[in-house]
Image (tube, rainbow, N blue to C red; front, side, top):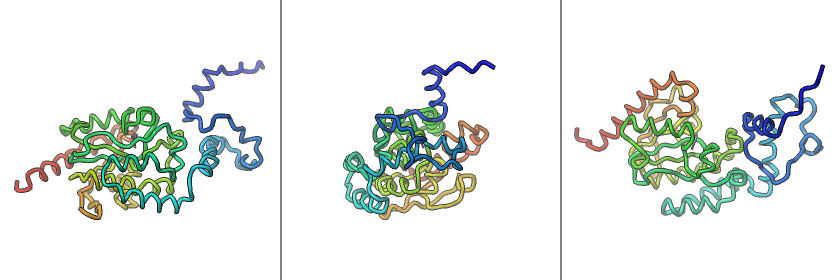
Length: 274
Ligand code: URA
């Protein structure tokens, strides 16, 4: 049997991209299989485990860049609380070193849209396109979010858009609970400063984190919650994340019901007497 020809560099890069490995975490490659301190035990060498070798590079970055999670959460709370405006909050985040995701992301993805809007959408974390452009929801799911907003007469000049996590997790991995808790005070303060009439959480992670529920999106979507900023109670509603709708278009019908409920709530708040 003749062996397969060695893959070209282009084929290898295409393979990495398909596997979600689309950013370099360090300047030099690290062979984790030959490093006794970081190589997984042989019993763990299943294919699924070896795919995780990219996120495994993060602790080395984190050890240098970020304090312990408890200290980082406390410092995030202290910093976010003091921000009198969105501009100051953005500056605080730019200078905040408590979250290791900052070290691997290209740039901060703070927000897009109108800070005076009556409606605010919050997703989970930026993806690849967002990381490149520095704006939330500009990739495929962002295009769908734009169409969802347009369906109820909204666009980015009449809505404000942000994420719970403002830095892209490498390879789009799920943020850890610690990373979420470290970033939480900043998005909470952002919501308080924007002070919208309606808050829309997009998908499970943002819904569970902001609306303090453990229920899944199938149960929470379309339901109204009270979101207490500490100074005001805001009406909040959960709906499907656009990325989920791209994968499961049959749920667009339910998303449409949620959008109609959102449009109705905005209308009611405009003319409370009617
Ligand atoms: N998904 C999110 O949750 N946020 C973005 O900004 C993009 C994709």
